[in-house]
Picture 1 (cartoon, helix red, strand yellow):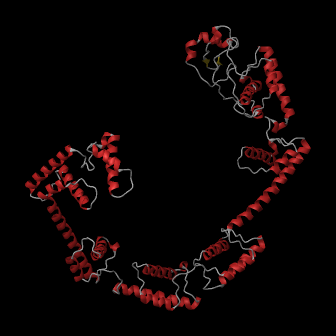
Picture 2 (picture 1 turned 180 degrees about the horizontal axis):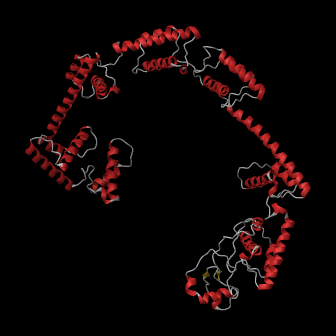
Picture 3 (picture 1 turned 60 degrees about the vertical axis):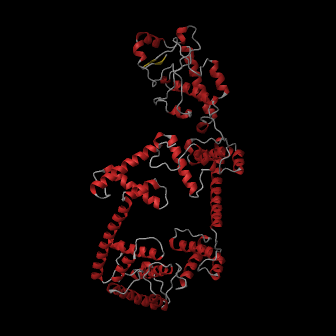
Length: 610
């Protein structure tokens, strides 16, 4: 059952079963159940498959072992030369697997293999070689430490000084494990050697020559702090005030480390000295205890702010006062939670006497209410402007030139549409009633916004009469787009008809549909050779060239119509602009009576489809 992983899904599944079995044995919760174990074992499944599983790999291992024995017989040791790359790699793998086996981890090392390796002296030689190597390295570091002691007078090498510093730190760690009964590399012989040169197992700062200088510097800062206390009445030196402020912060940090049982330069003598002048180990950020006038000054500023603006909600961007106000809320919350805080009952009464709000939620509600009142005032102003426009023009369909008022009206329609769709909207029932009371239209027909219905209908009728004249002259209503305004108008009618059929916004009404169909207007253009005799002639002459000249980017009077914009007014304003819209060709004919008229007409460059 030793399926190699490289065989695909089955190989990966087999490997996964072994992993799940190992996890279940380690007490982890996985998917390997007793029923699955029984099923797999019933077909001879092996839970430990060796390096790559199966008898062939055992043969490979034995072959490598015989090579190893030959190498040892030749060189007299277990260290395989570097030139024997494959054998050397095998030896390294065996050492790693043996170490995993001894640590109780998953390993391919079996008792049979261990017996073979021990019989050849592999493991004994391995331990011996490692012991010699590590002992040699340890003695080299010890001699470096002796030289350091002779030069500096102590063995306290800083860890950051390089390999020797890290080695010294590691000896203290090994010694601590040795005392705790854990298996580590510290031996009695090494302990005696280190003790013989005055090695300290627990690092405490000693008053060496260098450290005497540090003590002198510390005392100098302490005298500066005494002078500061005499001048200001407290020891709370701000860190930004310079060297003394940084030193004061460092003393608090070192004191905290000493209380946590960590390495620290804070001694009992220094603690007594600092406490003798009233040094505080934990300081509240605000200096109320040092000079209570600070809080009173900020409170007076807040009173002035309240008198000016009518509330105490100072923005945080108002750096000094805003930060102070935010801090008062934080301190109040801490006092309510039973945590350390400088907020007193007296201060709470003072702040509440001027309407100070402890929760920002209420502050936000006040601000939103103020904004809503402002917005309502602006909305009413625009509504009165619209009333005036209605009184003057008789309708509420503002042209684009109306500027701000036109944009406001468009916004009302947008918000109304959102409300109808069940989405978030600023339009209210009250505003809807106000607008409808003056005849405001929520949905406009095409062009109403510009000139009103009457002007638009006049223009449409004008174009319709031009189309009737075209029909009388040419016998059809398929006006080419390149003929100008009438061609683009015909194209627009087809587009708006299509939009109306799709249920989209369109200016096409039932009345217009009836009038256009009364003169034989075709909503979808069909091709007929009677309409394009010139093109039929070109097809006859240039049939082969025409088949290769198909291009969809020309406007002929025989192709379908598509309007690139839904706004008729924009189309009329762009009467002289080039039309780059494209319609797929329609190749069927409802008017042709014979087979020639209904077949596909290829595209001719410069003329269009026929």
